[in-house]
Amino acid sequence: MSVHVVSTILRCVADRPNGTTCPSEVARTLANDQNSPFKWREYMSMVHESVDALVARGEITLSWKSNVMKKRAGPYRISEHGKMAKSSDYFTTAPLVAHSMVTVNTRGGLRGCRC
Image 1: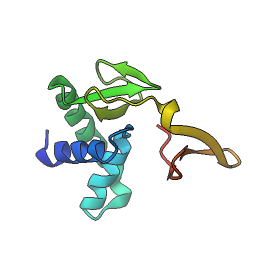
Image 2 (image 1 turned 180 degrees about the horizontal axis):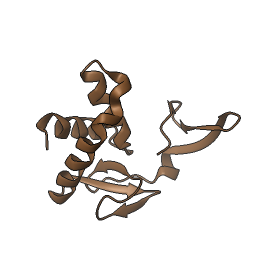
Image 3 (image 1 turned 60 degrees about the vertical axis):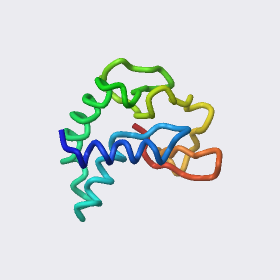
Image 4 (image 1 turned 120 degrees about the horizontal axis):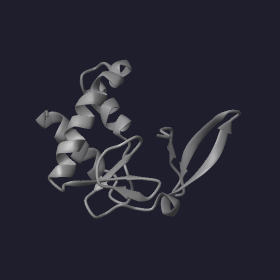
């Protein structure tokens, strides 16, 4: 587990106090930090490993579709421990183009990650 990966996860989560963060967003941030944005998938295993450690220490909460998860399994979102927001409170799904969807933040922002 890398200290840099852990700090990046915690920073991403803190940047969205009333919402959740996708693990791929963390991986993309790490890849951008290394000036290799197209290699973000290479960082996913480090993100998963660090997420497992942070969950074990009680520092973050995992969820999927507003259901809290005790451990990482399948798709998941990351939030501050005890501060998981219901996705229905903050986001709605709207079509962008045919066969493509984005998440529209009800406060006006767009989010492209759908995992």
